[in-house]
Length: 266
Image (tube, rainbow, N blue to C red; front, side, top):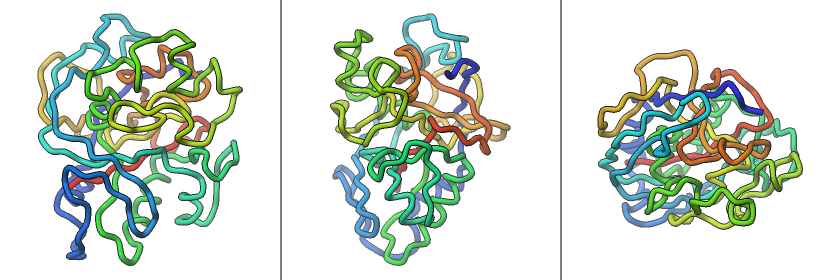
């Protein structure tokens, strides 16, 4: 169970700036405002428009208060986020091996560290014919996308009743102690699957505690020792799979409940 949980916004600005500027291939790439399927890998991405939202827990109480205080955030540029978590078949196609504890080609890859995720992204971006630059989302981008168009507590619903939440998420109530193939539950309003539950997802940000000030395009602390994960996983109770909840993990941590989801941004 994830009990010692915290979070951070951090960023590796080099990845974001590279993504915003393109990959230098002079290839067409995705068009803003439209969903995108990468022609090399077949990975599907959903367009997330720029927007303002309340980041963090708006209910005033939280385990360790790690997602407090709630604060206003504005994302000024739209971006693409993976429709699904990266699957084991996608990981193996790039990296040549599958580290996952629960094996299934369409299950999310698990047991990958933040450092492993960066190696995967580097290899992915080096593939011939790449049209764009892949990266991890910032924590703020991830939460904007997860909360959907109406700022929901869970990805797809505001209800923590098992009868409702289990339609959208794999978690302690229904997972059976393992991951499940991506896309089996209902998506949130943007069309993203498994943004609550299944596996925790690495973000680009270093961990740092929130402040109450409004922020524009936050990227977390400039330095740190841990990275932020979001989403909650197959073993977690509802409070840990809220869209606002966050965890702080060492970049070399390998756990059977942590995977990743990719972003693209111009």
